[in-house]
Image (cartoon, rainbow, N blue to C red):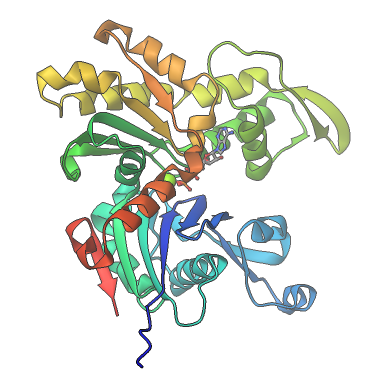
Length: 345
Ligand SMILES: Nc1ncnc2c1ncn2[C@@H]1O[C@H](COP(=O)(O)OP(=O)(O)OP(=O)(O)O)[C@@H](O)[C@H]1O
Ligand SMILES: [Mg+2]
């Protein structure tokens, strides 16, 4: 009797973002890792850490010992140095390992990348994937958000990431370059402004980009504040309670006008008879979708356009990874070249 060996396939949906990489598997694994790799600055760091590299949140925590490499910047893969590319490769390796493939498993993944990288960095990224998975396809992240939520026509996706805000008009086909738009004002831009605003408002206050980001992620809002935001900081080294309400509102609101302008431009990609439908099908995704009040403010700023409805994705930082996994599950890997660029071994 012959035993028929069925090949086991681990399917992955990955969103390789500037700040965070999300991964989901067809075996219910779900993880989020900061897109950063740290290398010890010198031998002392190696001794303390007992490792030559640290990936993700731990690298940020131990940043005083490490040189940090963020492989993506402004929605593009950094190709500045070998170290940046090594960091990208190590990160992807780690992300696949997190999903724990069993020995002998085939690993096939659809990888959502920022829209800009999808338009120009694909070759480099495909090279990086080579050897990490059996089959990998690269697809623009906002398209995967749309796929995951079955919003494939008359929908406009607004992916508020760390490096860029990507807009994508879905018209019932795979979106081309004309249906996508990147705005260079993502969460990192807000963090920089917030750090400066807090420092300018309180002389001698100690704040850095990471602290500003943490404050934004906890309290970020636009429009009317629900309550004052007072945070414990240090001024000239002494503990102090600092009111950052206005600083948060003003800096978070800096992205709204660009988003609204982007929506107006993308709207013209739809046939006139579809524009009203698209306006009631605006979807916010990406970590920045968690900024409180963003949806209502966009709706209000577009009120001259008739009925406008913004939906916030339920777990916005996983929206693209969930869509990529859904597509990976629904379309057999041998057809992936129809939706993106593929490497296979
Ligand atoms: N609760 C929150 N309020 C405001 N911003 C938040 C919140 N949570 C996360 N963010 C911000 O969302 C951004 C990360 O979102 P996301 O993981 O979608 O980005 P990314 O995919 O890594 O970036 P990109 O798409 O630009 O490559 C960061 O700037 C982060 O500070
Ligand atoms: Mg993203």
